[in-house]
Image (tube, rainbow, N blue to C red; front, side):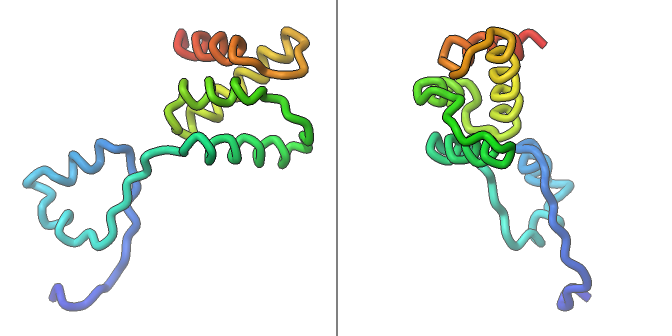
Length: 118
């Protein structure tokens, strides 16, 4: 009965899913997983390219984030795209409120502290 593949599934989840699948009760399912991939986050270069492409898709052609602000942003988010999105959005809002043309590391740290409070 196990010799034929009747269906294929893609299982995606948070890192805790790997812990759940390693439990004895899920051993049969874990044995049937053929490909396993763990996303470790964006590198600094990938994050900078990601932010640049997101800004370009919005019609922005000038550098809104200073180079050292991008480094601070990467340091705060650890490469997580979801955190990058939230933090960059908060930086842009604070930059707008302060009427600045370029986001600097100070704004990144302020945005990070505001997000951490929520």
